[in-house]
Length: 271
Image 1: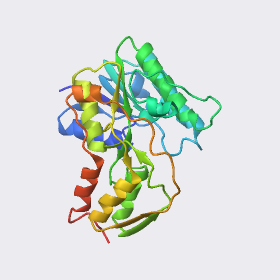
Image 2 (image 1 turned 180 degrees about the vertical axis):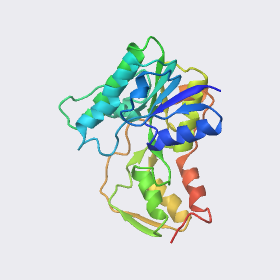
Image 3 (image 1 turned 120 degrees about the vertical axis):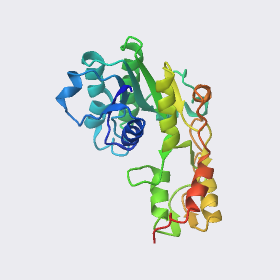
Image 4 (image 1 turned 60 degrees about the vertical axis):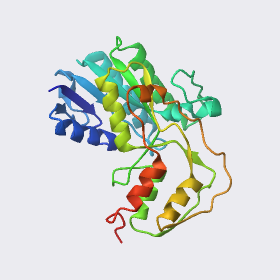
């Protein structure tokens, strides 16, 4: 039995990690926000899942505190064996089609308000990789989806809505696309990084973009009507290289196949 600490245990990914690790029989510490014991006990192997996503624009200071402030204290003051910091493939966005590899040199416009998310995640990554004496690694997560209540984001919200509605209209562009990875595959990737002490940065992604039009086709085939009314838009951002993830033995599933299967489940539609 190993000792684990999950920081951000009340969040979507953090709560899943806690549940699975406890099912495995591990000793799991899931501290609440501001818990003083965080700096007085041996944390063992740490998953740093704390962060803000959808509301970072209206909570910029909380975003920096979650991504950098608390992390700084953990790296400097806490006792731990190893730490995996959850970051985002959003950091590649400014690179356009040439981005997506863990070794890319990132670029940011420091005057753009939305970049408080990217810049704070990037600083968190730097602290982990340069100031942890080799004990920390970074997992860059793509667009994580699921249909549970705690899940967020475009595809997750669409799936939750599809549990109640058979006809859905969205003001989204058919051409827009994202690299989606299901939450279970993210957990597999994090556990593989932990088990194999993967160093540096690892992309947790599918490695291909799925357009809104392709998603709509999956819904149509399963008996839903999904209408997209948005204007034309760029097809997608950078496509992530997932060679390092595959080398760890993890091959994320195609989001279209996952969606098709769940839509056909007898108990999916609630109405």
